[in-house]
Length: 313
Image (cartoon, rainbow, N blue to C red; front, side, top):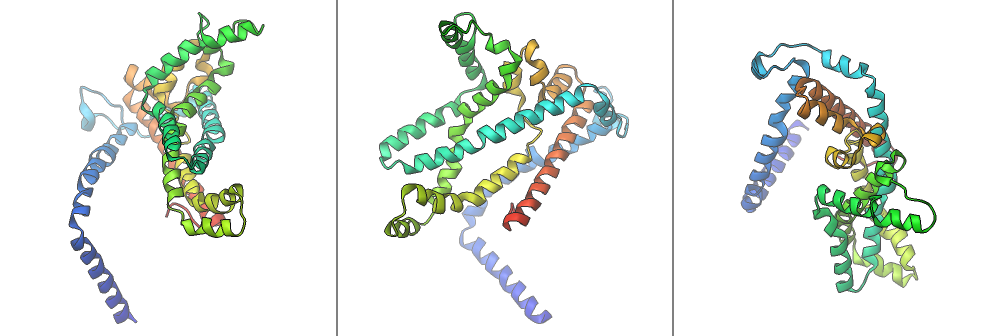
């Protein structure tokens, strides 16, 4: 048995080496990507040691004193921890409920368009906002919603609802942030689902048509089940970013009246780390985010494996 296992292992190794030798350029093309990952993803991990030090720029990284979990105790004891946690989870929940399904529905609808020119035109239109910076999107939002002559406040005023300052109202802030995310990224998010739909065997649809299936039945019983694994994988990866909302958009959109509902971990790290120079403290906050994200990925992966029998790997 051991001899047979050794032979099988040797045979597999020989096949892998043969596969590499047949297409060496494909593997050489991976080298820049691997170098990029090592430089920008793995080497910076050493910087996490700052979370356990009192970093002093004069002493440098290696000579700054170790302080154990001091910064973590400080973070968990600040009064704003609950507010940050609440706001971050609120943004994540809104994004998961309203943003996550839209690229899937959009991809299903685009897949149903049979006129190739019309389909490409629609795809181009929905992809375009992805290439706009948050500064441009913030400017467009301001033009539409400013109480000083904005289109929406004027429209509401003409309907007898008075002039509402939507930009400064905490009541509408989260909806506006999620709405911007949907407008900017929903079209771009369809790419991966459209690619998955393209890979579905045409024979399945032909068999369904012969059996008299309608377009809706084809989407329900062929398309959606075929991309369900991809949906689960993306959902698991998204849960890994449960405490990451992104600071650029929020910093641009946030005003003093909306800070109570808009301050999240990322903006907190920006204000304390970049603006106030508390590098060790904010590294501890960032490490906390990473640990929670890793735990969420592990839990969701285990749940997916248990329920569906498949996960990330």
